[in-house]
Length: 170
Image (cartoon, rainbow, N blue to C red; front, side, top):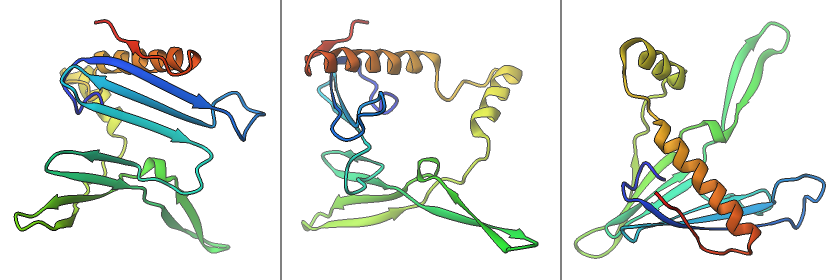
């Protein structure tokens, strides 16, 4: 989210609760709301208790929306005993199925499937190696990682204070 919106993060609100899984330490569900200096808002929700899977992510704008749906993928590998072996790839590791929804000049909203980028195996490690060897920029700059940690810390403080607005400085 922070790489999509170039404006400064102004404030963060975090809420979380435990209603089902009392034997573990993390929250059952957590919501982080972010407000940027340009007026944009972003929201992150993680739930281990929802009855229905929500989209992996979506981006809403004044001209349309892009929705990224989860993809469940199963690979089959040859196996001399079983003929083949199934291997499920976690949906969290798959690029989402993208659909652009846009209003036409005549009024109705049309949906258009977008092509997924070609999967690049070990992209993180290649980028890191290229950075060290050739000076290529890091895909996820340290400054963005620091900002994400700051947002998570502000969300934790907010949740501990029952959803208070936390202001990020700097």
